[in-house]
Image 1: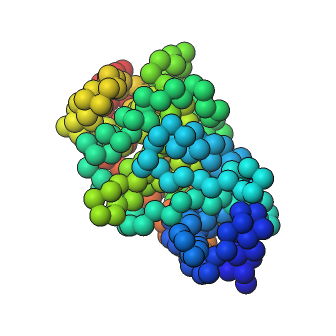
Image 2: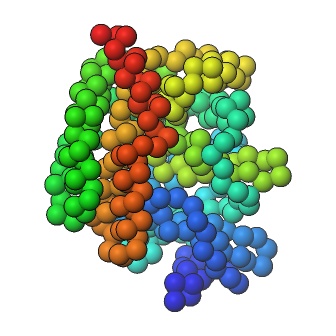
Length: 313
C-alpha cells in the first residue's frame, strides 16, 4: 500500500514515474525508501514526527543552499513540480533526493571528513536561513518534562533514577559551559551536527547525508566527539587550515557540546518512546536507551569533558 502511495506522490508532485519502491534503512527521524525510475534512482525521506518537521523543512533549504554553492558531496534535493523542496505526504513531510549508492559508514578518516567539511565551513552561511546557536540550556527543561510522561517505560524511569547523580552533574556542567560560551558568536559557520555518523562511501567517493540538524554554529558542534582524542583534534585542525579554514578549537565549546548532545540524545529517545505505538519498536528503543545510559561510545567523551571541567575550576 505504501509503495503505491509513494508512486502516486512522485507522479503527481514530481512528475516522476517510479517502477519500483524499496525500503532503505537510513536515519532516526525519517522513514526512507529508494525509488527506481526509468532513468535514475531517487531517495525518499518522510518525516512523520510532529515536533521535528519544522527542522526537517529548514534542513532542506540548507541542502539546497549547499548544492547551489557547488558542494557535490551532498545529495541534491529535487523540487516538486511547483518549485517546493518538500511535499505533504499524509501527516508527514516528504522530500526526494538524488540517490547516493554505497554503504553508510561511521569511520570516515578525519582528514577526509574535515577536508570535505572545510568546503562547507568556507561558504557565506550567514545568507542561509538556519537555526543559530545560542549556547542555551533549553534541552534540560525539555528532558525534565519528557521523563515525567506516563508513556516512558518503567524500566527507563528506574534507570534514570539510578543514574540521577551522574545526570545532575552533567546538567550542572552544561549550565557552567553555557555561561562560558554565551556572548561570543565568533567563528560561526554552517555545521552538520552529526557528520561523522552520516557518511556514505561508494567506490572511493564519500558523501555526507542527513543534514536534518544543520545550524549556524562553531565548528566544535561537529568536532566535539573528538574531545577524548586530542591527536585527532590536532589532525582535524591541521586539515582545516590546509583547506582554507584557520580555526583553533576552544575547550569550553567542545565541553558544552558534549553535555548538550548527551541530553539531546536522551530527549530524542524519550520522544520516540512517547510517540511510538508499535510494541516492537518501543522494545527496541527501550533497549537502545538503556544501553546508552549504562555505557556506550559517548562515555569516553563525557569523561574527557568532566576532566576538562575539573581543570577549569
